[in-house]
Amino acid sequence: MKLNTDIQVLLAVLVGFVCFLLLDYTIILGLIGFPFLIYFLMKIKSESMIRLWITALILIVIASVFFSVFSFMLLMVAFFVSLFLDRTIRGGYTEENAIVYVGFMIGLMTLSFIIMLQAVEIVPSFDTIASKVIDWYGSQLNEVKKILGEQVVDMKVISASITQFFVTLPAQILILGFFMSLYTVLMVRVLNPTGKVWQNRPFMYWVVPRFVAHLYFIGLLVSLFITPEGSVYNVISNVMLILEWALFVHGLAFTYYFVKKKKMHTAVVVLFVILAILLRPITIFVGFMELILRLRLRMELTNGRK
Image (tube, rainbow, N blue to C red):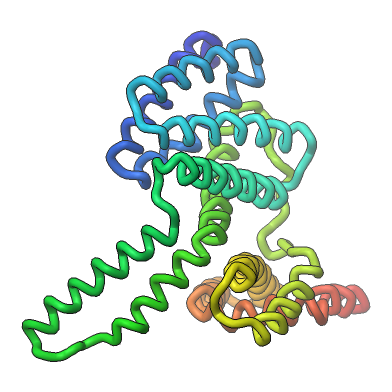
C-alpha cells in the first residue's frame, strides 16, 4: 500500500526517535535500526526533497534536545548515506561498488565526528582510553595474583596488545563502516524504497583493484625497516589492516568462485567458504596471489577455449 508522503515523514521521525532511544541504551540496538531510517529517508527523498529537509530538521531538533551527541552523529550519517545511496541507484552502480563507497563514507564520517569530539574533549583521546584500559587490566591481574600467588599472564604482552588495538582503531572504524554498509545496502535492497535496485554482481565475481596487492607488498617491505612506535608506524599499521581486509574479501570471493567453477556439491562449497573465513591469514595470501597472478582470469580464458 502506498503511503502519503506526510505519513512517511511521521514514520521516519518515529523510526529516528526509536533509533536514538535504542542508541542511548546500547550502540548495537541503535545500529540495527539504522537501515530502516535510511529506507524512509530515501523513500521521502524520491517523492519530495523539501519534505526530506523538513524530516531532517525535525530529527535534528529531537536528537539535539532529547538525546546525546551520538544520536546527532547517527542522524547526520544516515542523512548523507541516504542521499548517496539514492545517487548510486539512479547512477546505475553495482551493489559491490555501492557497499564499498558507502562503507568508506560511513567510516570516514564516524571517524571525523570522533576526532571533533576529541578536539572539544567530549570524548577522550585513544591514547587516554588505552592507558585507562591498561591500568584497569593491571589492577585486575594484581587481584588475581593476590589469590593465586603468582602472575598468570604477562602484563607486558597484554599492554602491547591493548596499545596495538587502539593504534589501529581508525582502520577498525573504517572496516566496521564497511560491514555497516553491507548490512544497510542489503536491507535497503529488500525494502526497495525507490522501486529500483543496484546492478547485481554475484559475490564470486567481486574483485578489488590490483594496486591493492602492490600497496600491500610495499607496506610489508616498509614495515621491516621501521620501529614499532611513532606516527609512521601508526599510519602503516592502519593502512596495512585495511589492505588485509580488502585482500581477505577478495580471497574469499575467489575461493567461492573456484569451488563453484569446479561444480562441487553445495555442502563442499559451504565447507570451503567457512574454512576460508576461519583461516583468515591463508585467505589473505590467496587473495594476494590471485591479484598478482590473475588466476581467475586464467581460469576464465581456459574455460573459454574449451
